[in-house]
Length: 168
Image 1 (cartoon, helix red, strand yellow):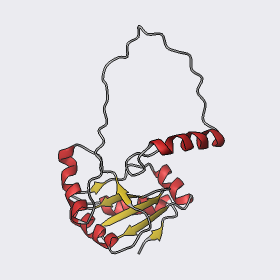
Image 2: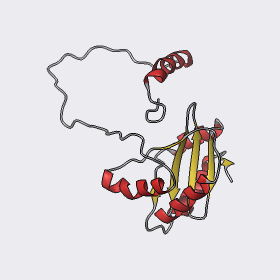
Image 3: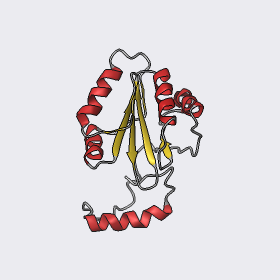
């Protein structure tokens, strides 16, 4: 039932199919089509498709990240039931983004299918101008080389919780 996703076209077709006419569309997939394509090309993205939902499964070092696209909550519930029947080697983690009141019904669906809350992350933002009285340091920034990126990843991985924090 799980199939390798090999192109953004497959994803975009499913998105159009599920979103068209949907009155209660829900998603946890905020990746760009470019990012979906990169994951597909690198072979880390697979999918499980049902009549009313598409589950994307992205494999990483420690976990399988689950993203959903569903026409409605019932379709999501049914797709998660199909997923529950499968055996995967790594823990499955899903990030649900939104205001608590907006996410509550989706959280209830995941809970009813065996998922449990692991960690709640709160994003904070500061509005207003930065203090311009402080001098700005001169910093030279460049895109990391492969070797530099590998060293940064090796430094960060032991400091991060692989179930809750991801290196971009």
